[in-house]
Length: 222
Length: 222
Image 1 (cartoon, each protein chain N blue to C red):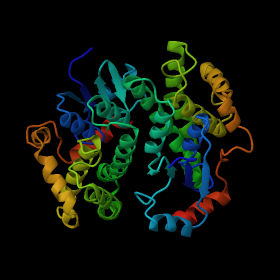
Image 2 (cartoon, helix red, strand yellow; image 1 turned 180 degrees about the horizontal axis):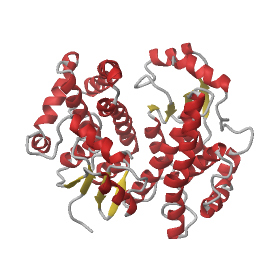
Image 3 (spheres, each protein chain N blue to C red; image 1 turned 120 degrees about the horizontal axis):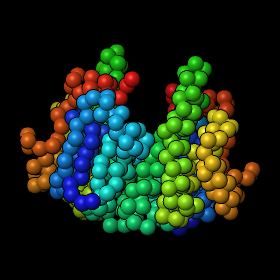
Image 4 (cartoon, chains in turn brown, purple; image 1 turned 120 degrees about the vertical axis):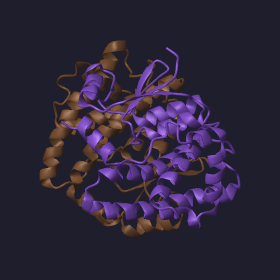
């Protein structure tokens, strides 16, 4: 059935945030149903709504989609943000896997003990600066276009902006050695749908705080 | 340049095995270069061959592809194993992501510390029989077709047969509660390309042993 996609997750970033970004960038309005208690999660599980008993889950186009990557692939392709052919898709996929790995590391930080967190923060900053950002800086430099793939906005650009902003929350000047990424950040942030998503009052979620962490641990039992 | 795809990895399953399976199921011959020294790995990084300094690496259609999922998506798309439209692709993606979560547990198992091994093994069995296999048993039962999606062989089927065989290596009777999956396993195993891949002299790799673990650790760590 038609209607807005409906997102089922906790009221925080986690694995759902990239989905919020992509829908927002595509100009798609969506609703959210927040899981606040263990009982909320159990209900979804008992309803048979969660294919593998896990969230994120997005109700979209008559499907109850699970698995972050599957959901993102579907939205990207549906809204022409996945390149024009197999090869462009291959490059978008490779780039997105990189930003997924980087954001995945950052996402775990709030759940770690103080000393593990300190070590991982240093690793994240090192990886961002030596493994990930150089790849995107070079891609932009090599072709001189505004976007990563095919001279057109794609999912890879949206995901990279999200990753840049998350990395900057770890270290404010993390882009200091990457002039093209700085320009990229400015450009993509100014795309009207994205600019709107970056404003207060949007469905973008803030970084995890202590209260949120406690709630997630209670809901998911860890 | 054309020619056979070239796989660069350790001489073992790891993250490359699903790629070997998919190429084999697509009837595509490939070459392999095996890494067993750190020097070879560092050279690949220095050459700029590894986008994010990680393996697997597959040279295919003029690209040096990295990131397992990107590589698999490309192969699936190229050889018509990715469904006929966006919705079929969505189901293939969901199934593949679920199966990957299971096979990742198996892949990581040899690298877990001795005291965690028993617990991890039990978790693999629990997840296979309670979270993953029931989904595919139900899907096959509901539509009564030979393949998971769209009444046609897809990436999801290849990934599932691989996972079933891998779990059976640890728990031979794991399919005892799953008659549809038993029939699926037989059907898939008898497909000519897969039958060929299951024969002793094929590129299929044996289960990881201590030597494999030692090689991986030696190559990847300082």
